Length: 366
Image (cartoon, rainbow, N blue to C red; front, side):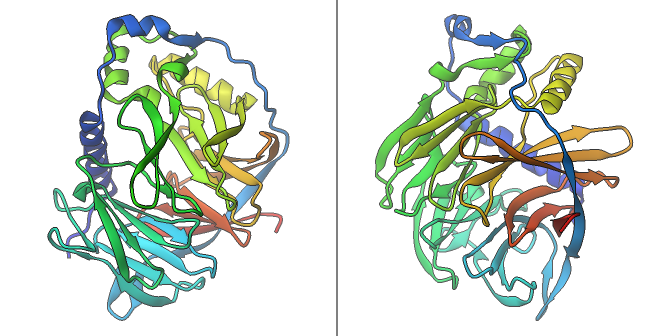
């Protein structure tokens, strides 16, 4: 069986991103560039004290039993009963596993345009999965331009097709969908019937650039990639929407579409490293590259910061409460340069995807 290399996977994902950004691109006129606010020297407002190491606890890959193999896991989530759901890009199916990674069942299939079927493009399927706070499983088939809804036993419920693809999807306790905006907003809200409800935030009001003013060639790239519409987001256990704007490092918290808190996050060490790298490369680099909520504490969430070194990679994980206060900084020193992407934390364990494997981490002092 043909095995996809990490390089090919990366190229495939870059192509998908370029296609999506082209399809969702909007025109920004030259006059609008004058509205950009440049924050050349953002002041640190978060100060790292003690760092706690995350140690690798277990790695899961390969044979899952019953002629089922984990080849290329790219998306993962967990339900309230600690069952784990993993989408494998090579297999084009979802594995439902126990917390001990024993196979319960598989579901989802590739095919044509039929209900509950995912569509491949270029030999692979670009899919992310999400268990909504309403207890349903959502499959975002980006290559098929549709979102599918299943119950947690894998029974198909409904699907909604679109003319364009969405990068990510979040569903609240009341069934509202949070999707990236296709117009001048940042996040569009739809109800459970996919009727448009509201738009959260506006790109014109959040056109901020850190460290230096972009050059003309950078501007063209920023426009093509819808830079000011890029964000990280997740939902707390209480359906509080946490939104991080990558351009400015500003955080917004929403409850029922209303802003309940907003603040900038500039951690001293991460800010200094990002500023240095941005100057060397003459480009913009978001301070944080990932977000996930704490499934053990409804009042906390995490941001991940990637720092590349010559000999190793270091991932710092910043834990914040909903007031924007820094609770703890964790880190992974990765000599193999796998750069694991943490999906969630539950029962004191951090679940990550990297190098065609599932990797579990735990704090060194626990």
